[in-house]
Image 1 (tube, rainbow, N blue to C red):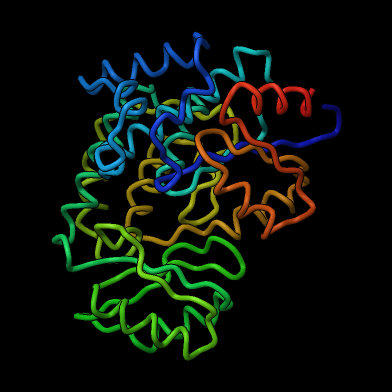
Image 2: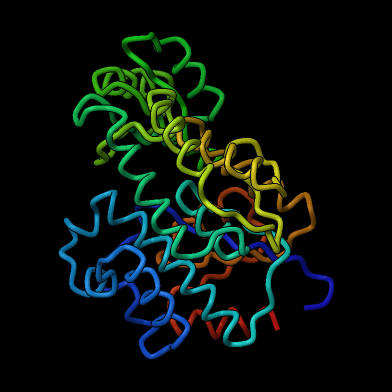
Length: 313
């Protein structure tokens, strides 16, 4: 598409559902990708996705490799159908690993093993029940940060960790502190503040042990040069060398996901179309709230794949 700039976005946890690859049935690129991922883990991911149960699919150690491989499968299907590689990529949290795999940095087998390790380390960093997250809606991000800074203490951590949309910020920390923070957010003007059904305070400083473990693990994983500019969650940079990528990914575990700034960056670079690649449409919805002028597409089944190919032709 002459004169247009395209960014592909890859979703993270929360977009999974039983049967989510059914719309790609029969596509060799998808089947081959899922077979490779399953072999790398010694687990039948295809059956897990098709049959569930949802409780098994929602386990962090399953969700992360399932979402990564599904998103990469959708991207490979797009390429196999004649789609052109985009100029930019980004992924939300876990999705950053999918973006880097799509950009050729990770081998898929290494990537699914890495995110399974990541999932276990993020879960183990804080004992179950001691940490959680909450979504704050209808309150500006700077106000959310102000409340967090006012309430947070070493034994009662409260931090803003996912800047998802101008009026939606996720906070994380110690469970009791998050519950108190939800009340304070409502007093500050939030429309809603809801504790999320998650098992750890992802992207908060409490996950420093996971960041250290990831740094050590990734040091032994072979990384190649990216074929597109992949914007890192942690600092909006584009690391072109393996050392920089490893550092960005390890720090990401304990630092905020700066999604609003990521989409604003794309718009400032002249990106005209963004494509959510993988199950669900969560990121597409966020983009519309952040930068309504961007054209939003998605690839989550055959129909949306063909629609995207046509729109970008």
